[in-house]
Length: 302
Image 1 (cartoon, rainbow, N blue to C red):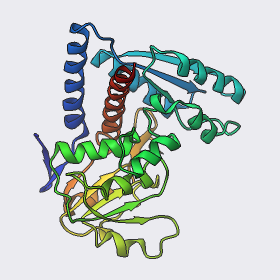
Image 2: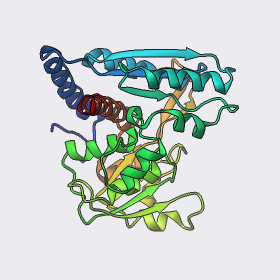
Image 3: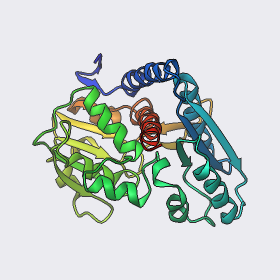
């Protein structure tokens, strides 16, 4: 795959990798339609009007349109009672035309995210957050993998990054990124087979661990947390973070920053993801891949 170089290292370009994934899905969708099969259908529920969530959902809808998927977006008020949200989820669960269903996170404080995630039927859980999906992933069974970790695995595959026997350090232990990422990197997949260390907010001398890492996945949500003195020469660095930081020089009044101090860390790396233009685009590609898989699984048991 074509790569971009910067100051002697190579960029893990999410646009390049996600474009390849989208092109493959677009071709598969066209073949399905030509064979008289349905287009995969993704339904999304957006509660409130959070700016970042609006951007993410709009991107998902655009990608569905580009690929040829059907998409349905339901917008709900931020003060909606949780029972009404759960009723909407159940309507999509019962709709046989809908293959994949997601509720955009985060949710308003009065709504239990755990309850909402568990309300989505596992067969439509394209975000990969349901306990059934997570349990199957841990056991190495076919499952929907959370889109961000899955996107990172697809990126490692697309750029053919060697990982077998490498020491990977994952910074962060969230159920959305950190925990599933550590599990995936330790599996027997071709672009995994790592020895994995998980670091978090209670880790003493976190830099001691990251300086040993061949691969660092930073997923803690603190802008420019990972500094150059925390990374060894030749490391592969995956930056999951994306935070809006006030910046009066920008037209929108803010800049997007990752968890990695890119300008100073990048020269030490063999490969690194940019922010924006890295993991975020792969997350969308992974979600679309999960949606196609959901459609095919539903057909196989129909």
